[in-house]
Image 1: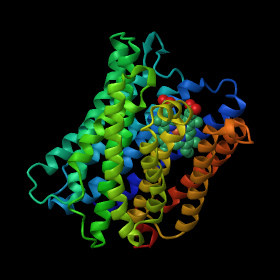
Image 2 (image 1 turned 180 degrees about the vertical axis):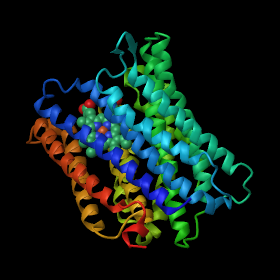
Image 3 (image 1 turned 90 degrees about the vertical axis):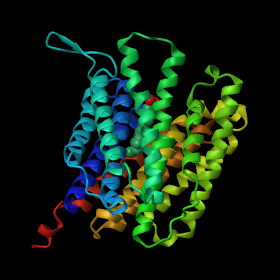
Length: 409
Ligand code: HEM
């Protein structure tokens, strides 16, 4: 597949990030000053923001995986990849307008009542299954298993499990199942396995694929299958504490501790190749260090119960924005981006993301700090503007899609 194809999808994935990030920024201001009249209900806009953001991460990862797979397998990309990528882009983006007016509830269009949000999420999820099908077809029977490939194989299994959780949401709605335990179980199966499972392993794979290009000897001994298997029960820790039995909590907390130890091994290997890693990948690792610290602290039930309430949004964005989005941005730029203005964009990104990260963390500790929670929320809101500006600037690093045209060839 020509480089233009991947530059185009890096651009389109970041375009989704710009739009979902602007929505997140609007929400950040709405949480301080209230939502402007007629702009929608906060809960619905949060759904629009979070679902669309998952589109940014998955499209960016798919572009990186499809880019590296021919080199790792010695095979050609399946023909369906072009259509699958186009469909993933369209349905990821459609979730923004589809969820905005009514979230998961129905919207009246003419004489019909349609649950637009659930429908768009369902279609987006189908394109994920399409990706998984094409991936399995491409790697099936490949003898030489590079570390990156083994990580992606397990990442795809975790994406499959997470997608079942995502598909359960509209299904429960259709079956009118209101049981809060069942609803939370599937919600966190999706949210947490997507974030701490698929995203983690797929990104590790993309980083190793990049290191492989730089002739770094892959750490073949690093745990892959065991890392994936220990990740599975950790989604329970995202559930409301009053819904878990002590046995469920201890199982998940122990598994989480093992995962943290494995992640530390990966970090150690990345540390040894620090100079070769793109700058934003290095910055994103700050998010992983926090996860390791959190896994140790969560081992105390009282700290976990407090954190699930006070630091939920910080924790999610530590993983999804600081770690995953920074690392993805770093890999996309290193792999397909222009050289010009790269440093400015990276500097602005680290400033905005770092400031929002600090403000959300401090907000959790506001009762013990001299500044009010509202002040920290306002800082987070202004920081989010810097992040969106950085993302807009990142778009220019992938334009024009066809580099030869810009060189007048
Ligand atoms: C420009 C950067 C971002 C901003 C300004 C932002 C802002 C927000 C805000 C204001 C909320 C609601 C917080 C609350 O309910 O108290 C939220 C929730 C959320 N965001 Fe973001 N966000 C950003 C990046 C991301 C990214 C990169 C992802 C995923 C890849 C993401 C996924 C989520 C999720 C999953 C939720 C929680 C949804 C729920 O409660 O069901 N966000 N975000």
